[in-house]
Length: 366
Image (cartoon, rainbow, N blue to C red):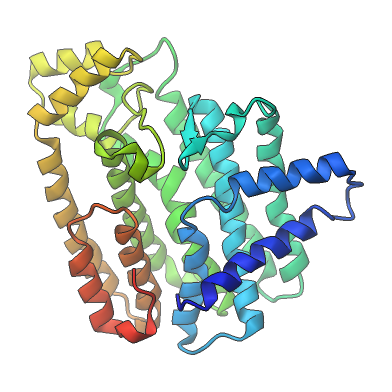
């Protein structure tokens, strides 16, 4: 994204926030208005904003020329709707996982004056999205499709969260039900649809495209989402908290992580016994034993092999799309995503692929 567009994107957040805390459908007083403003500022704009910014980038790549002020505002508004949706998911997810930190600060529900009020705040965040869409897109020919898109993706995400949660039921911990297929289902529905497909789909709708004609775009972006969730699983264990913005707890929380699935696949019977005895325990010594086993199985090397294989597969799929105009935002999303994961050995190769195809001078440096 050109440097002059990001400040405009951030400015749109303040406009939307002001509209919401003065929504005529509710009689706000000073206390409720201040609460909503503080809650929004704490939870919505604090991340990297990749999803929201990608809507603007994708739309600009589809259009192929400078955007009007109105187009920047509308694309930014759709981007912020995704960031609002993300905030809703994270506020409730942190409660369900009993997490402590998010984006380098205490989870919203951990604040002394918040607690379980955060559950209602999550509901409010979710309900802000249709209000924003109604105010700014009700007269657009693609309005109904936008509403349907957000509703569908929210349902898919909540269903993915359900699969994730029921595999970690207290008192029913059973590693034997963990597999690559279960991991993929969780990732596909819980993360890939809203994080990777939704931003590009919003841009396509705004550009006047029929999403039914771009099923392959969805498939590629879902594959991309799986790829990045594997990266997140890896970083949860091996990433530094000051870099990833949170303290990884997948081992303690008995998560169906790609790492434990691969460990079960590669381990001998003795090593599987070690996993069964230590995985999912809060005890730091048990966590250390699991991490030591991961190192013994060389999961870092296994992950690097996975990266290389996935990269080649995804680039082939992207370049095989018949529309060069649609190729651009998908590949841009891929390059930006890898770059923002900080540690990938593939960043340089992807930058060269992307900028070589579409021109570095026209694009935001990932």
